Image (cartoon, rainbow, N blue to C red; front, side, top):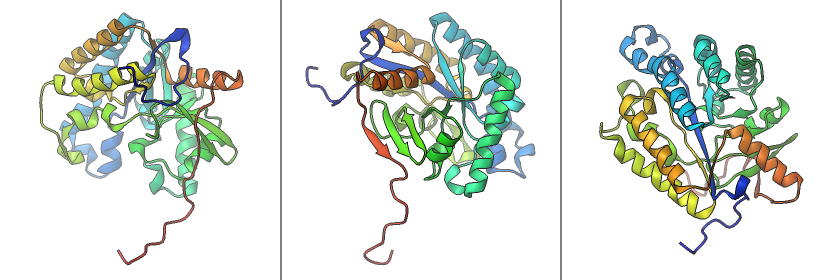
Length: 303
């Protein structure tokens, strides 16, 4: 296609046509304990499905990453970092990035300012204790970033956010105290609506071949490759790490590699690249200011 559909794509390293980041949210049972606190200890079947992530899928994903020499980024709630510290150490030992994803998968926009900061700090402490380094990046659980989140991230030393869906390429978030690189994605690259069939979370997606989901993931990649975009998955080990889906993931990576001129990177590497381009005057990203609004919009009529 000769028509360019992205106005201002960044120059990617080595002249690559697009950037690809395989990212996973390793939530394990945090989801269950958050949504069904009292009942969770007896939800043994659901727990077994979620524990599949750190116990079975993570070693499998590491094997895939090692085969393709592929960096990955895992966003992990602090409770999961502590509960499955062996899996997190295994990931970090292989060179994969560990990002912040709350403490028990709390939604920041439902918390008080004090509680949001408490959750943020506890997650930082857990990651630093297990990996030896604080996280550089953050993804809000359930995309539920609040109007206070960005200034909190800046105040506590974060470099980038990976929650929002506002562009096809990186952009900058300006907020009180500084800025963040925003590494956006889209719901189309989330495996949850493609696969998850669990009554405990009100999800009953039809059980079908991974080929259907992979059609979507490939289409998103092919468009990014044509137009200079950024492709960021939001996969979950207990979902996309299942055997047939992991086979599909291998096929997706092979498809990307066959296209050529793809920069496979961790989220931290992409953020570093963006800030380097800006510092050298080689590219100027779009900028947005958060929060978008500081008060509700008045309604014209009662609703």
